Length: 404
View 1 (cartoon, helix red, strand yellow):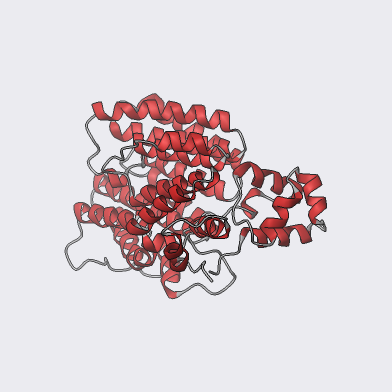
View 2 (cartoon, helix red, strand yellow):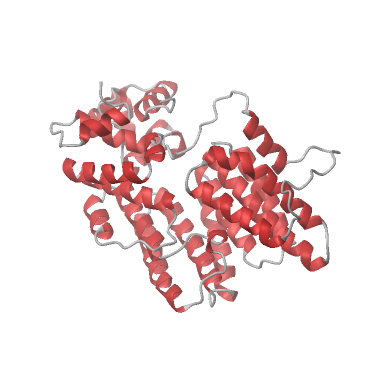
């Protein structure tokens, strides 16, 4: 895989800081044995508290150590034609005539919303190549609708344009293109201000907070999510749409606290979000849930499992995951994260067989996603290097290219 191993990142940053392994151990409080195993690729992952300590010892941002695929890191090479087309759609060339609508049918708001719904489905299925193929046409259609018709029709078009640009921002984040992501999201915020959707600006703010998290701007991410959540809570949590947007923002703020190594505050916010999610069953569902923030009892519990695993609380993570029933609208990407985190928790408590069972389920439901996910490779590598190799591990190791 082209993705840099965690140990290689640690070694590279340590040399840049002119530190020995012993010096890094002294500055970070992480044992020299852990550092040595990481750099020798005998240990393939580390929990969030360890990464926080290493980043402080190295004088580097946490994001220099974190890997959060699936995605493609920026490597300095020229963008492929697909991505160039996405860039041109998000940031149209100056003085160029507007493109023709992509659909041979007469453009309409229902057709455009159907295109958007399918685009978000591709995103949550990690079908990034296919999404790059169709996204420029979706953005072009939305731009056209935002520019023609009555004032109400243009406002509806701006709402569609905001969601299309938000989708472009999410895709760019996954492709490691933070400059393009923030450009798309800034344009989405502008469209939201001219749109008919009172919740759109808050939804896009959640996406911007995620982009800030990826840049290690954790204070900015927290303040943005909390500010947007306060606005939604005042006026919109009596509807399912509003409650889902508010809950998504609360989860985003909790994640920022967790990345700042404040697990207690993050956990308290997640518990609040989980209680609020129970109110969704009493409210009429959104007209199209794919165009609203991902928020449900399932998504909150999945995120709680993830944060517990990242903070070296595997028993707590497994207790949270036990008996979890996923709602029908839980996106595939969230389902796969749950299995991966459960596998990590089993690995952390020394239950190799339990980890393999979770990984086998993951391979069945998302083989392509699993093959390109560095954490999946790291878990299987740790298990393969361990003293016990339960049935099924060899097939997983061969599938991921770990077995030699």
